Length: 477
Image (cartoon, rainbow, N blue to C red; front, top):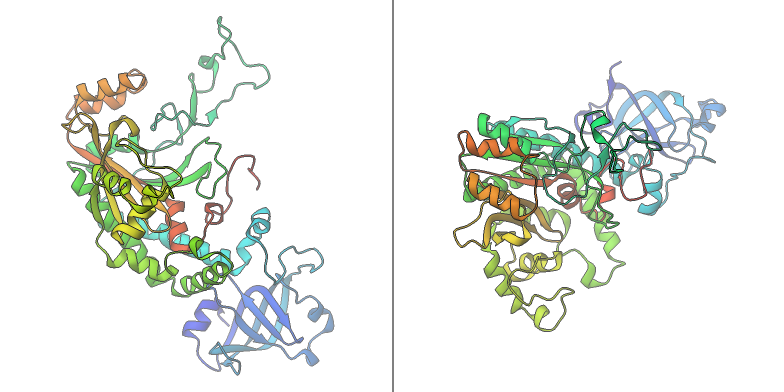
């Protein structure tokens, strides 16, 4: 007999067919009904056992999370909420699970408790649904760029450069931590280290991706990035995945078009391929939010929020116009914002971004032409000398989800910007070479993948959308 997945049986099963299915027991009730799940779908398949003719020792081992192989006949279900069930002919316990010791019993657990058991939490409905959505989004990322003629480039994880200029990087070293070699000045002598220089885990693959865009036209990276930022918030991770396309001969308008098309494509894909998971996650979110004050609830249900992105054109607004809107807004005038907007040049916070999307424009928003002082050195300076060709995409419930820019292609201007920000020209001589040998207009953006998963699943903590979160004081598993 062929071994089937639960998803195959529930969607394409044939009545009176003899089947074999393997999975983990979710529940076993009345000594008769086994809810079996193998991770292929949010839905369990009910397996009905003849307990009077089943070995009592086997029955004792049918416990939550035990691995089992079931052979039987697929029949029409008499119960509600399912079309099929299996009349069990034979059950083999492949791996027992002691109910006295197994921590995730079939009851409601807090997300904090499940984080402490991250190696087992994916056996719950919530986390299996989140991870299937994450997998679908990941596939859609590659599918979109490949269809659009991009080449996938793997940029370095160990690097000597700080793309963001923020300095919040994890050092990579093979030196003896207790007794490192020292220079005459008493500093650690990194010339004696493995790479012969000070190196770190990458904060972004952008700069290296630019080098490939300037030879292959359209490229993208999709890989892990690291920030040694001591932020214990629901929006920050020390290790996360970044999607970073770079395109030669493309100005900011084209960059905004690309980002909007990309986001709509991947969300449409997950809506089409994960309907059961999204329905479950939406119900979970609605149930969770019943306990919250109205002001803290999501502006709309999960699938409606996804449709909100798919059905609306993204409104393009300059930073200058946005600041005027915010300055004159009721929350600002009545001092309801935590960070009041008083003058041009302010770095916008999530509360401002969400106000623009949810209250003022009531559609996704792309802000562009930000003050140069609050943006990175590589962004193209506008003719006014005070703004750069940067753009951020703002979503409901989340604020900024994408940050990008037209890159500064002029050698002299880039050198001046680097000097002003104290960035070592020698360290980035290879980056400056792109502006010396066949420079051209080019643009790109970065999207933190976990923030996209957060949006698509309705989860409220970024630690719950990555398999094993890395955060301050936490590197378990």
